[in-house]
Length: 122
Image: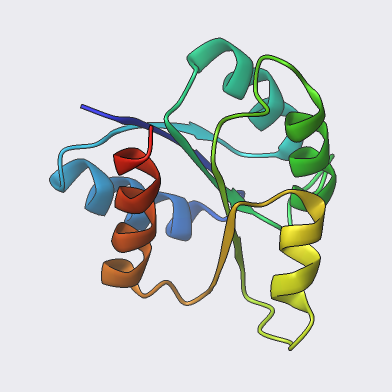
């Protein structure tokens, strides 16, 4: 069972995604801000990180840059998640180090495809 780290500060989004991912057979660990997410990425060694980009303490952009700069977490795929669907946001996420990017509201089948793509390559 693959472990996914979900870094999301919004309770309802975190609960919905966690329940749906667990029903699909994934182990899910949760963080509620960027600082906690960075610590958990190192300690939990997830197969994939789902990173909300609008987080308290350390936002998802900076948390992604930190994780990609560290030897112990740089190879964990990060899928950035954001309610911002502006034309440059995907490029901004990829430039920060996200391996992929998706918009909210979450299209769950599309997100699963992205997760499974990274798991197949690991």
